[in-house]
Length: 113
Image (cartoon, rainbow, N blue to C red; front, side):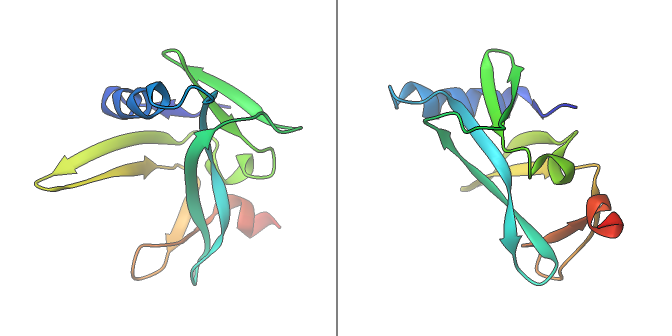
């Protein structure tokens, strides 16, 4: 099991965490969204929840709720800037399909549930 950050994503997340003295790390997961089923959730983690799985990548702690882990295990998070636009990009080996607009996805875990 793993969640990893590219150097660009780690630098960006560290910048967010330095601005918030209550921050424990990054919270990463999924929620039901869009027409395909899942959308990513990314926010500053200010507390640990029962059942969280915590990964450490270069000193950045990544908190993942156990219920999200089947959909995001193995994901590599990148931060990409193109012109004036910047965003986190997810390389998730579990994704098997997505909606036409790119806002939601399905995973291997959906096929077995």
